[in-house]
Amino acid sequence: MRCASFVSPPACPSLTPGKILRNLHFISRALPTALVIFCAVASSVAVQAQTQPLIDCNPIAWLPPMATFVGPSPMAAGDTELGLGLGVYAELLPNNCGHVGDDNATMRFRRAFSDRFDFGFDFFVGTQGGSTLGGTPKAAVRYLVTPGLRLEAGIGVADGGGERNLNADVAAVLGTHNQAKTWNYYMSLRVAAARGCLTCGSNTNHAPGALVPLGAIGTTARISDNAKFVMEG
Image 1 (cartoon, rainbow, N blue to C red):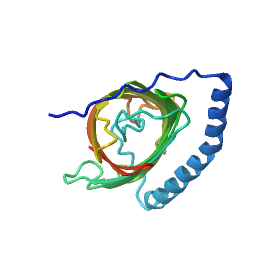
Image 2 (image 1 turned 90 degrees about the vertical axis):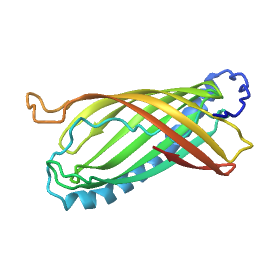
Image 3 (image 1 turned 180 degrees about the vertical axis):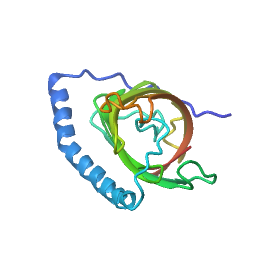
Image 4 (image 1 turned 180 degrees about the horizontal axis):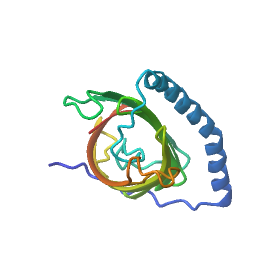
């Protein structure tokens, strides 16, 4: 396997209180827009969910958004990353819920505080089991160790329609970063955990908590200096 050569990123600039305040101010202005998009997608999915029988077919509690979306490429301080992913799937073999087909959407916002460190949010909304509408926002941080290695961590909450839970994840991402090439490649190893229903009390008829590892490979295609197309699986 041939790997692109990497160039070390510039040293991290110091985070002065003024820079931190400017970044926090930017996040406070951008977050409402992200929430509006999230609610719009959620409402469109809700139309489909309301036409289905309300059967809880979730085998485990809701996990946080687990998409990697992009390889370990440096971001300049002050840069913003926005992402939108859409997905559908169908089950060929029947289960307790029959043959179901689900759809979902993931939205991402990141703001770079330095050349190595960024902070932001992921939003996931979708149906599970063909009937249960749910969503989970996650606050996440990413740290670029080298141009080919990035570490990630996040914590979130979820509402699965009839139950709520906490979730979190950690990940390591390896990949190529060659700005002269259209295609770059990456792989990630992520471990996510979900704490079962927080509001069910002694009622045990709910999806249990879980610890789930996930490996993914992906590729990014540079469309322009400010846009990339991502395929991940």
